[in-house]
Amino acid sequence: MVAMRRMQAAGIDAFGGQVQMLELAAPRSPAPDEVVIAVHAAGVGNWDEIVRLGNWDVGRQPPLALGVEAAGVIDAVGEQVTTLARGDEVLTHPLPLRQQGAWAEWLVAPAALVARKPAAVPWETAAAFPVPALTADQALTEVAPAPAGKWLLVHGAGGVTGGLAVQLAVAREATVVATAGPTSSERVRGYGASLVFDYHDPDWPARVRDASPGGRGIAAAVNAARGDAATALRAVERRDGREHLRPSRRRTLGRARRGTRRRTALAPRRGDSPTRGGRGRAQARRRRWRRGRNRPGTRTKPVA
Ligand SMILES: NC(=O)c1ccc[n+]([C@@H]2O[C@H](COP(=O)([O-])OP(=O)(O)OC[C@H]3O[C@@H](n4cnc5c(N)ncnc54)[C@H](OP(=O)(O)O)[C@@H]3O)[C@@H](O)[C@H]2O)c1
Image 1 (cartoon, helix red, strand yellow):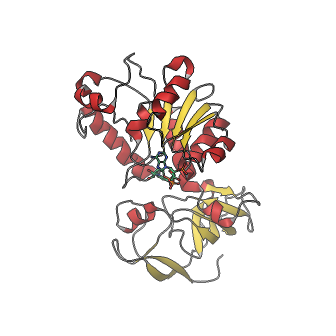
Image 2 (cartoon, rainbow, N blue to C red):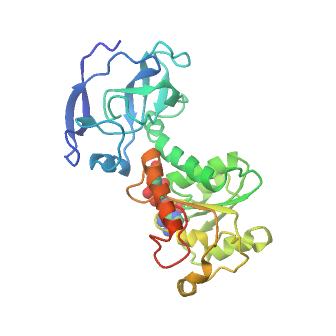
Image 3 (tube, helix red, strand yellow):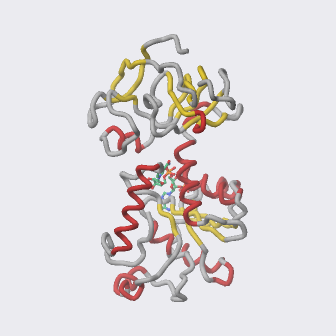
């Protein structure tokens, strides 16, 4: 049982309203499958702005503490929870929200969506980990459900999502080719990437293809470079046997590419979330894509 009846939070009293300090009801006793977490740190991302504007349904209405990821210490456990105990250090991305968001003193989460925090990981790092990690896992799983032994490109591996995608792919026994800037390339090699190309070199997609088995191109790609999916696609193996075209020719020959199928997951667009709501929007966009709508003139825009 949580003793306090009120808690401090940062959030909104109406969708579209400014973020402000709120005093909200503290969590009730947890339901049988829930835990109450005393929040030590909470993640902040552009998706919180999407929630603020009411464009991502996280399961609750204002007055609402924002924040969808956090790390903290278990304060109370429901009667069916056997895997966690009071005092455990944990992290979570608990959507849909059971009570309030993560920018609050306490957070209610289903125990099934709570993981233990390794002791060596700082609170802030643990709190900012779940959403990028889920995004990387979803993108990787979509393009390469069975990556072992395959070559995979991660474009934008210097960023948090791309870096996690590299590490997941390496852990799943893929051979990873990555792009990164000069200041990040050593770090990306440290994640286990076999080859790292500087994305400032405009010919990097051709260099990646040349380095791939038989020079055919990479089997699949995760794009974590904002707005640069079309560039990443130039490094991906085509399944129709055609050659890759320069961007200027691609536009004029777009019609000939109908039916081309390649596997690339793109970083979600603004308005997408990496969780269910955003995935739903991305899937709807893919359906529209297949029906021929939303196609901005080339055949290089695949899934999002
Ligand atoms: N983070 C998330 O949880 C999340 C969730 C949903 C969607 N997304 C989407 O995923 C994408 C990446 O987000 P992020 O948060 O991982 O970004 P981030 O951590 O801010 O990554 C930025 C890094 O991207 C690299 N970069 C910049 N321009 C590049 C280019 N033209 N080609 C290749 N790499 C480039 C730079 O790395 P160097 O240091 O190597 O120069 C830069 O440090 C965005 O489109 C974002 O909207 C992210």
